[in-house]
Amino acid sequence: MQFDDRLATVLRMRADSEGGLRTQFRQLLDLLGTSPEGADADLLNRAYARLGELGDAIPQEEQSRILREGSLRLRDVRLVNFLATQDAKPAASAMATARLNEEEWLAIIPDLPVNSRGFLRHRRDLSPKVRDLLARLGVRDLVLPDSSGGARITAKDNAPREAPPLELSQEVEAETAPATGAQEEIGALLRRIAAFRETRGARPVAPRLPLDDEEPQAPVTSIEFRADAAGEVIWAEEPLAALLVGLRLTGARDTAIVHTQLQTRKAFADRQPVWTAPVTLALMTDLGGEWRIDAAPLFDPQTRAFAGYRGCLRRPILAEAEQTDSHGDRMRQVLHELRTPVNAIQGFAEIIQQQLFGPAPHEYRAHAAAIAVDAAKLLAGFDEVDRLVKLESGALTLSEGQSDMRQCVAETVERLQGVLRPRNAGFSLNVSGDAFAVGIERGEVMAMCWRLLASAAAALSPGEDAALVLTSKDGTITLEMDAPQSMREGAAAETPDTGRPRAVSAGAFGPAFAFKLAQAEAENAGGTLICKLNRITLALPALTASDGDSSAGSGRASG
Image 1 (cartoon, one colour):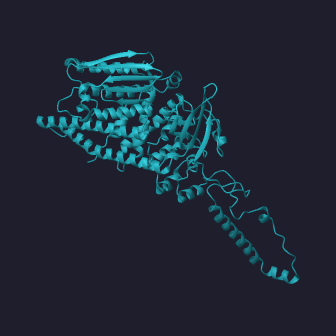
Image 2 (cartoon, rainbow, N blue to C red):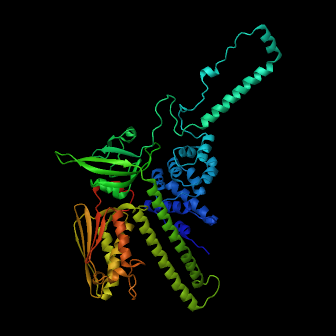
């Protein structure tokens, strides 16, 4: 029995905020894009209905950005067909990122809307059969035929030909066989039409004006550029300079065309160098698609004032991208194979514990309840592993927003004090500074604080007190914590189960894994987490005034 309730869980999730709507939209796309054969039809219909409601609630630009994320796998024909019928921007992104095989493309293209077929003409990874089908359906670039197109029907060909004067004997022969000459003219015309169609079908992919000039150029894989202090490109290499100049490429905010990750935007805001950072250009030209950006800040030699960036845009290496995707796919497949039997065990345990199929002895019900609890813990652990893999591979970014780090730390300490007070243990929190806003959604910050402080609380010995120091200085928020004595000795960090029941736990795999996950979250947010022998230091970039204005509508302020 295979039991996978992820789709039902996502449909039950409450999505009251903008961040919740985006999260549910992303999760539905991910699950429907890889839905297995034989899935529950009623559940799928509910999921597609909810996806349509989310499409009406989320702006087109945000839908387009989510659809272009590298973590999504649009491999389901029904989902691709559904997205093709949506608004123009989401449909264009879906057509650009869908991963169907040749047979699936051939089956779905005739039923696609005309606009969505047109978006496919910009893809360079379609097979010749798919391109031929698009050509037969009239999908092609609106340009004149290629100069190497072969036979053309010119004005000279179409002009009536003047026959030479006939002699008397020829006139008699012509009168006796008028049908023969007409048949020859029709045959010649048919042969010319056939030759024209053959040469037309064999023309190159990128047609040019019939000027008999140079051969088509190879695709551009790298472009050097120069940006001013505001982030706008003021110079770029040919041949795409005209398309790139004027774009805000190194700005601290995303635009309708340029999309970067949160840590990349923070690096630009702090005027730090950026290397191999992903950037997506939402353009329907040769400049559009996925790029990698390397950029270094420039400063005026006289005034030392910031003068902008100089850098290079380059296409990602296809082999590396395919290797990364395949590694992520394998890991997700492993987690799916682990979740399937655990979900089944949990389902049977709940059936016995709740006596859904009939009465059961109390002893069996007690065992079933314990099994259901253990299964829930395993599933929570799998979710943590999945989150760590996605963060380390760059397939997941923390939700943007605005939250108060001081308030999150104080609330977490207050929650833990109730558990630690009977053991005469606890935390002593000292705060200095006044700017503690971070550009991360409150739920993400609370989860990060819980991983760190709950791991430390579980390791505190009776009567032990750990000092916490929270400071805000020079645009950085720092949380420093004294490591408990058991962590310094290495016992708590190396084994997730010490043999005694814990009143509080940060995760199923112990403190070492919890710290590793918190470190990945901190690095994803542009910060660091350093764990030394007796000191744990978390550093996150503070939210500046300009960042606060741009993220006020995308997150929930907690202060």
